[in-house]
Length: 221
Image (cartoon, rainbow, N blue to C red; front, top):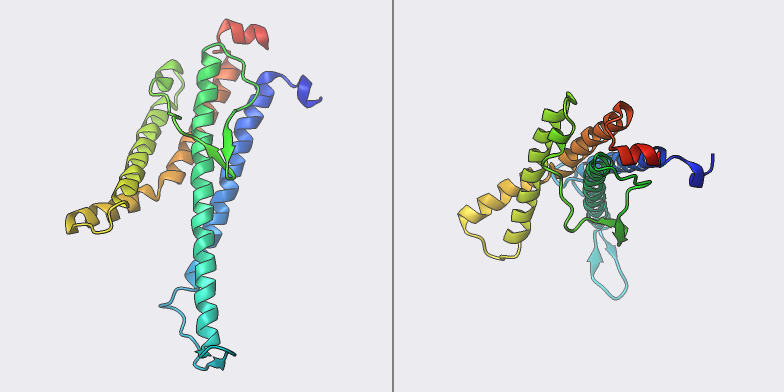
């Protein structure tokens, strides 16, 4: 069956599932980058003494220089994979929730739709619907979906606090402690968003399989 003749609900569920798979790939890549970066922690490695004379310069300790270069490279990879994981996990959460809401409202989207910029999904203005668990009726995982939404919301607030505090070069002791606490909590945003996305994907499957779609959606199928 060609892409153009696939039922809308088939291509929609494939779209959501593929976005979740992308988030999982970034999660594994970030975990691998964290492990590799840890291997070059300065507290674990001592540079081998010895220098080389570089023409036109002074003396360079090659082993120390190599360790420093590798630390920078792996740290950059860790930061970048974290950014991709967080962005894709949030897109998964927003997309799965939006797809479920759309189907409940009688719409028949064939795919998730996002703008892309600099290899990332543009998520400005995206929200997680507060009333989705109630709209799902007796779906048993509704309370869990509502709880996950609150967790994601708190992580987003922590991330916003980190961004606001990072504008100040000199932080008071109180603000510095707040920054550290917010940074630690915000670090869990990607995992929280992925968990919500997985729950919302299950909600979408429930809506489609249980026939909870609006009559218009059923007719379009």
